[in-house]
Length: 85
Image (cartoon, rainbow, N blue to C red; front, side, top):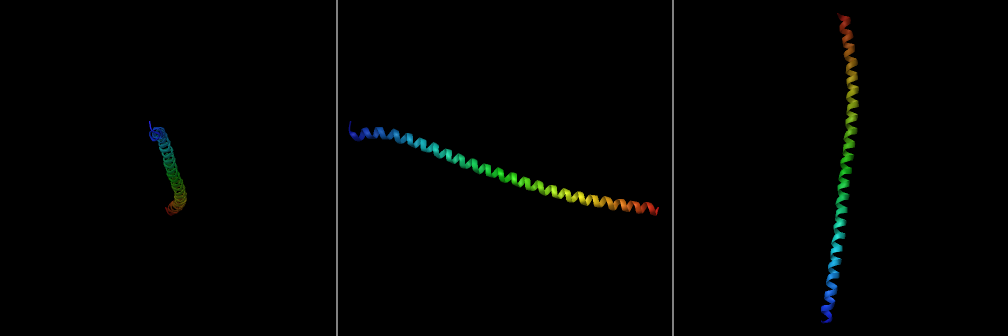
Protein backbone atom coordinates (compact mmCIF):
# COMPACT_ATOMS: atom_id res chain seq x y z
CA UNK A 1 0.00 0.00 0.00
CA UNK A 2 1.42 3.34 -0.96
CA UNK A 3 1.85 6.13 1.54
CA UNK A 4 -0.62 8.50 -0.19
CA UNK A 5 -3.41 5.93 -0.16
CA UNK A 6 -2.72 5.27 3.52
CA UNK A 7 -2.94 9.00 4.32
CA UNK A 8 -6.14 9.40 2.32
CA UNK A 9 -7.78 6.50 4.16
CA UNK A 10 -6.92 8.15 7.49
CA UNK A 11 -7.67 11.77 6.52
CA UNK A 12 -11.04 11.26 4.72
CA UNK A 13 -12.90 9.85 7.76
CA UNK A 14 -11.43 12.61 9.93
CA UNK A 15 -12.56 15.26 7.44
CA UNK A 16 -16.01 13.65 7.34
CA UNK A 17 -16.28 13.72 11.13
CA UNK A 18 -15.16 17.37 11.20
CA UNK A 19 -17.68 18.26 8.48
CA UNK A 20 -20.51 16.63 10.42
CA UNK A 21 -19.60 18.52 13.59
CA UNK A 22 -19.29 21.76 11.63
CA UNK A 23 -22.76 21.27 10.13
CA UNK A 24 -24.26 20.54 13.56
CA UNK A 25 -22.57 23.66 14.99
CA UNK A 26 -23.87 25.76 12.10
CA UNK A 27 -27.39 24.35 12.55
CA UNK A 28 -27.27 25.16 16.28
CA UNK A 29 -26.25 28.74 15.49
CA UNK A 30 -29.08 29.11 12.96
CA UNK A 31 -31.60 27.73 15.45
CA UNK A 32 -30.41 30.19 18.08
CA UNK A 33 -30.75 33.08 15.62
CA UNK A 34 -34.25 31.96 14.66
CA UNK A 35 -35.25 31.60 18.32
CA UNK A 36 -33.91 35.10 19.07
CA UNK A 37 -35.83 36.59 16.14
CA UNK A 38 -38.97 34.79 17.30
CA UNK A 39 -38.51 36.07 20.86
CA UNK A 40 -38.05 39.62 19.58
CA UNK A 41 -41.23 39.32 17.51
CA UNK A 42 -43.20 38.17 20.56
CA UNK A 43 -41.70 41.01 22.61
CA UNK A 44 -42.81 43.56 20.02
CA UNK A 45 -46.31 42.07 19.94
CA UNK A 46 -46.49 42.24 23.73
CA UNK A 47 -45.37 45.88 23.70
CA UNK A 48 -47.98 46.73 21.08
CA UNK A 49 -50.67 44.96 23.09
CA UNK A 50 -49.69 46.84 26.24
CA UNK A 51 -49.77 50.16 24.36
CA UNK A 52 -53.18 49.32 22.88
CA UNK A 53 -54.48 48.39 26.33
CA UNK A 54 -53.24 51.67 27.79
CA UNK A 55 -54.88 53.60 24.94
CA UNK A 56 -58.14 51.73 25.51
CA UNK A 57 -58.04 52.51 29.23
CA UNK A 58 -57.42 56.18 28.47
CA UNK A 59 -60.34 56.31 26.06
CA UNK A 60 -62.63 54.53 28.53
CA UNK A 61 -61.72 57.07 31.20
CA UNK A 62 -62.52 59.89 28.78
CA UNK A 63 -65.83 58.29 27.85
CA UNK A 64 -66.68 57.83 31.52
CA UNK A 65 -66.05 61.51 32.19
CA UNK A 66 -68.22 62.49 29.23
CA UNK A 67 -70.99 60.15 30.38
CA UNK A 68 -70.86 61.59 33.89
CA UNK A 69 -71.15 65.10 32.43
CA UNK A 70 -74.13 64.03 30.31
CA UNK A 71 -75.83 62.48 33.34
CA UNK A 72 -75.46 65.69 35.34
CA UNK A 73 -76.83 67.76 32.45
CA UNK A 74 -79.75 65.38 32.02
CA UNK A 75 -80.52 65.60 35.73
CA UNK A 76 -80.52 69.40 35.45
CA UNK A 77 -82.86 69.29 32.43
CA UNK A 78 -85.21 66.89 34.25
CA UNK A 79 -85.23 69.19 37.27
CA UNK A 80 -86.08 72.18 35.10
CA UNK A 81 -88.84 70.25 33.33
CA UNK A 82 -90.37 69.17 36.65
CA UNK A 83 -90.32 72.77 37.86
CA UNK A 84 -92.03 73.94 34.66
CA UNK A 85 -94.88 71.46 35.07
